[in-house]
Image (tube, rainbow, N blue to C red; front, top):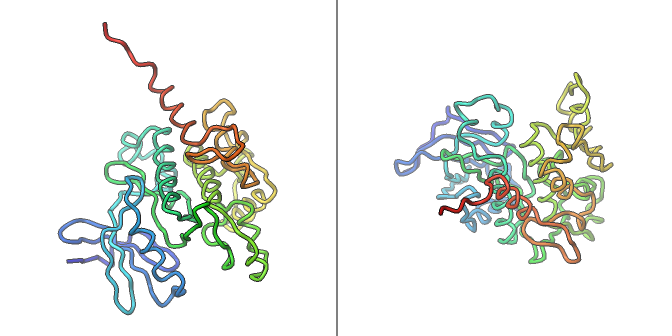
Length: 304
C-alpha cells in the first residue's frame, strides 16, 4: 500500500513534485506528475524509459500508480543530490566522510550514463540536481522526464526543440532554440549532448563551479541573478569559451584533458564514454578514470 506525506516535499519541478512516502512498509520517494500539465508526447515517456533501467548507478523505478489527475512513480529513497553535495561540501556529517573518493564518483556517473545509452536512450538533462546520492552513498542518475529514444547509432530527431537545462546544453543543441520547427525537421542530434553535459557536471563536482562561468574566474566577482548567470554561461558555450584553468582546475589534474575532450564544440570531436569513435586515438572517459583509479590505489604489494 502506498502512502505519501504532502508536507514532506523532497523536490519540485515544472510538472511534478517529489514527496517522502512509504510503500509496503518501505520508505520511498514518490514523484507525483500532474497529468494535465504534460503534453501527450511526454505522458508515458519517463515511465517507459525507467522500466528499462536496471543498473546500480541509475535510480530504480519500483512501481507506478495512476489516476485521472496524477501519475505516481514510486522510486528508491535517497539522502540528497550531487547539487546538495557541491553546495554543502563542509557538511561532514552528511557527506564528506562517507562519499566515494572523487575518481570513484566520476566512474559511477560515467557507468550510469553509459548504461542508459546502451538502452538507446538519451537523457537530455544531465546535471547535479539529477544525480542522487543513496543512503549507502552510491550515485544514481535520475529524472527521465525529458529523455528521448535514439537510433542504435545514438542519433535522435530534434523537431520539438531542445529540452533540459540550458547551462548544461551542448552548443549544437543550444542553437536549436533559434531555429524554426520546419528547419529542425532536417536536423538530428546524438547522444554526445549527454557527454557534453556530463563533462560540465564533472567540472562542477570537482571545482564547485561551472566551466563556462567567467565571473567565477575573477576574484571578488559574482553574478547578481540567475538570469545573468544563465545568459553568461550559454553565451560562452556558444562561443566555445571555457574557463577550466581560470576556474581552478590545473592542467596537470587527471580530469583536465578528459573534461576538455568531453566538452568539445563539435560533437564528432568529443570523447566517448566507453567506446572510441572511429578514427580517434583519444582515450575514452572510462579508460582515463580507471587508469587514475589504479594510479591512486598504487601498485599491488607482493607478499613473500
